Amino acid sequence: YERFGMKVEFSTGYDSSKNRLNNIQLAVEILSGVRVDPGVTFSFNGTVGQRTAERGFKEAGAFSDGLSVQEVGGGICQVSTTLFNAVVKSDLTITTRNPHSRPVNYVDKGKDAAVSWPNQDFKFTNSSDVPVYIMGEIVTENDKKYLVMSIYGKKLPNGEYIKITAETLSELEPGEDEYRYTNDLPTGITDGLENLLGPLKKIHVPVHELAMMMSIALRFIPLLIEETDKI
Image (cartoon, rainbow, N blue to C red; front, side, top):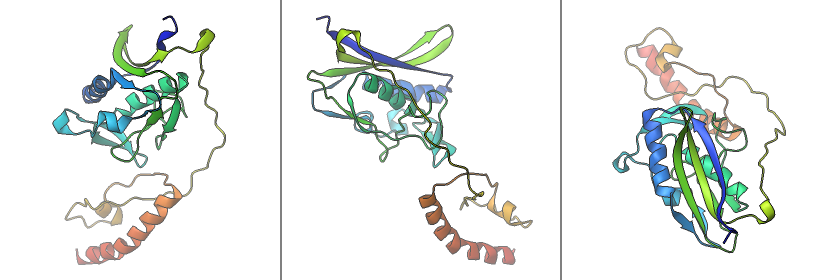
């Protein structure tokens, strides 16, 4: 029986807002005790479900298209990320994993796993020959909070362990500034296009998103100029 027990655990520290902590706690409560049988693929979205206010999730910080936004369920990517690292160290098979659009502050680059309902998911397959169990908890040590995700099952033999390392293979230089326009325009503004469109922020956009944005902008810019002439 010494071969069975906690395979591995992984923790991430954080200083979260009340709403973000609420979302993390809800996700951890849902995940704790989940059993994944041999050959079965676990889905984070399929297990946690849609993050809605009716289910108790609250608005908190999140990333969307590289921008910081407030969304219901914000913060639970820390749960999927912490679980991802525990699964990798457990020598189970990762089947679906997506990085964030920008680095997160609770784990090293290349070690994150973003989730977003319903598109981005984190999945792994139990490639061992026995069931594994997921456990999670939030602990406090020296006045600091930590999220801990653990995998229970057959331990790695002979005291073996897996260490995760991340390596930067290349870096891309940012291109020219691009501007993303909004339909939420203030009324009664007459002193310039920037005020008409609202605050403009510097962002870096992937090429495929830029092409789509430019096609939209080309349709709307003539309308904006026409409305400006009317004011």
